[in-house]
Length: 245
Image (cartoon, rainbow, N blue to C red; front, side):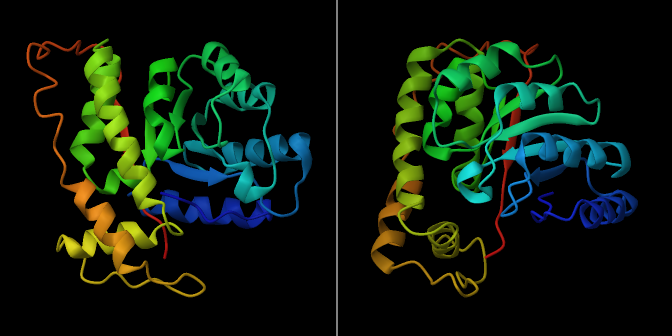
């Protein structure tokens, strides 16, 4: 469950408590407070309050190009030591030295999950536990297979499938998300309408057509030949994220 980003900690706690009382939510995906940019100390205090009083496990949504608030590795590790914080959706726009430090230093039980769709494959190769990906609304089983391949040390097939899915993600993000994704899902008959709310505009027919062509590509069908005995002891985390549009 994605909790709307807010810079009002008290209001966020109220929302989390209401969700917890519904009994239908396993965890809440919560972005850093947007716009205000309270600094890392303020952001840490915000999440600590949510963890202590919200009543739900939390996945931190680290997406600084939307919130304006970057989070350092030390801050994410501090959050990862809070018992109620179970992971981070990591969408910083890069795989860099900070990424590698986070993957090698995060607390046990704290899952680093990819959030930048086009680079999910190299992030998994580097040690991420899974992903929360808008693109996984399309070809969901293939994204799950990609995670299984990397966790099963099937690097060759994983690279090939990852490159294919990266092309799909690029096409799905050719226009503001989730407009192309909704267009493709509608074209496939999986949702009743591709409509989005202003200020978003519906994706162009060309963008939807290009993405829809890639959404039906299955060039990796043979990748698991001889790879059927993937280890079952490793954690497989796949999440599909939808966006209000």
